[in-house]
Length: 76
Image 1 (cartoon, helix red, strand yellow):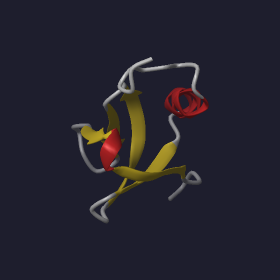
Image 2: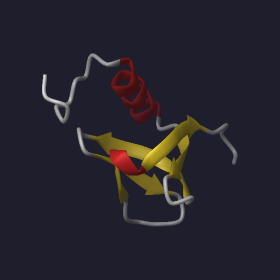
Image 3: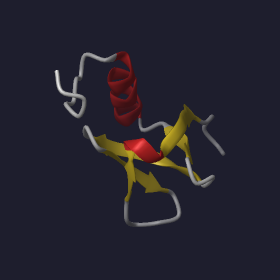
């Protein structure tokens, strides 16, 4: 399998898909030190699309730029 292929059988991909279905609020920490908070709306082999609560437009985040993805408790 080539490295950039999207493998939905991987546990990380399945967990992100669960968070998409459940509309979990996530915190994404990026390699440049920024932290983004929002709801993940889709993923592919290259990017994630995050819908920040303070914007009408989603943000595309390169998988290579992410250091940490974690769910936040509701109400934050």
